[in-house]
Image (cartoon, rainbow, N blue to C red):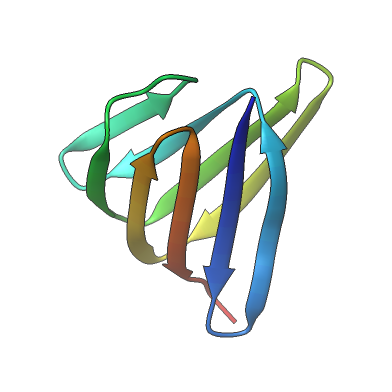
Length: 82
């Protein structure tokens, strides 16, 4: 499991443990799993999928943002539609 926090100017959108997550990267969609190599990526309009478990998947629609992954900690800062 990994620790993931998703922040927007309006507040915290998600803060918890995830098994994996999918992101709409500027250079293409990508997934992050435990022990992922460190990465910083710009995000484009799309959906972040937070997979807490096989039966608990959360979707956050975003306009843009950035994600940083390091040592099984995922930090995400995004803009969302009002």
